[in-house]
Image 1 (cartoon, helix red, strand yellow):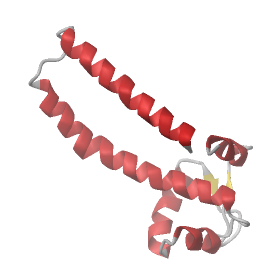
Image 2 (image 1 turned 135 degrees about the vertical axis):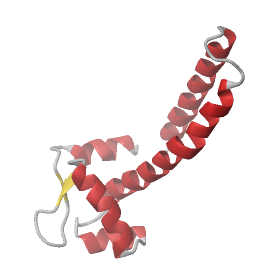
Image 3 (image 1 turned 30 degrees about the vertical axis):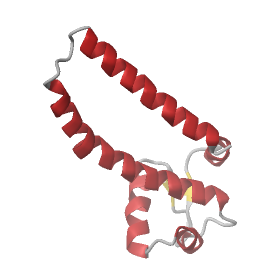
Image 4 (image 1 turned 30 degrees about the horizontal axis):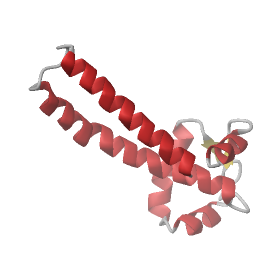
Length: 120
């Protein structure tokens, strides 16, 4: 968990450094910062928030004793309607599938192991 936090902090510092270099070299002007801030706040930030829920669901699938939909929903304390929104997105992306009614599985081989390694 600490490693993940450090990676995120490092990513932010790199973005700040890139912005500094772009302004100092004259590629971006001071007036451009308002547009970039608006894009970040109104477009990118909501996308990141939605994506974080999807990551939480996939991580919960890895940790759950079974991949039964009800078990995963209970662990996340999500309603059926909320969960189905994210389930549809993950299915559309080809990350999960529903082999039987009420059950989920990963479509990608060894994806569960990959997710578990990322949490270390």
